[in-house]
Amino acid sequence: MTKATQSVPGELRYNCLFCNNTIEPNDLDPCALMLIARIDRSRREQKEQGFYCHVECLQRASKDRRSFYILEHDFDTVGEIEDEAEEGLPDFLPPDPSQLRKRRH
Image 1 (tube, one colour):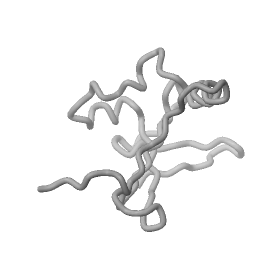
Image 2: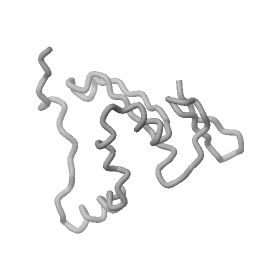
Image 3: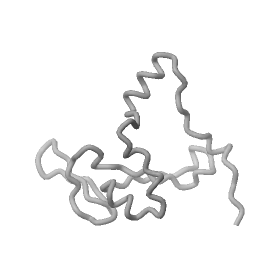
């Protein structure tokens, strides 16, 4: 289980889910992954757990490394998206879980 620890007062340290090493801050690290179980159910029925990792470790664990568009230099930050929303530009809304189609196995 990954965890955040506090070795120096006021300074959190994170261990990577994949390699278990301490994550040193840089342009993208530390990263947090939110696991949402029961994504096809209402929000009240879902369960959440957070994990920490190196973006590089997450990429290595993925079978499709092309999906990491967050690594592109022109990928907007949350603040940039909020600024655009305040200016009246279209905002991204995550899909409503109740509208997601269930997969058939």
